[in-house]
Length: 159
Image (cartoon, one colour):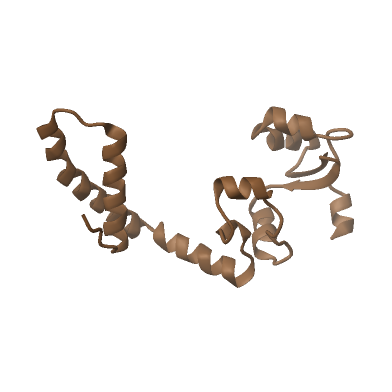
């Protein structure tokens, strides 16, 4: 595999970190055009990286078991966005199990059920808005979404 990686074009000069920060999501597309293909190598924060896209790349990355998520996310980002034990840190069977659980939750029938729960919660809340003559939207939506989520998950809410 190392020999194969060496045939991938190198772009971006000594280091592309500032270009990545400047270009954001456009970074890979513009460098791919420069490299004339679907993949390229560059240097980010002093380390050589391989940038790949497409179905084959996704299968290589997610399906091969060659990579681990351990240490991939900086601890400060992890605490800000998620927490220890999140799916982003799991590998192997634990990751596959959590991913399958999430996918079941986002299948069409599950989403349709959530929509029905949301409509029901909205309908129950609306008369209170009319009676009060005003509706502080954030607080009302928090209550509606909480009720809909609890109903959808089959978790009874007290009061």
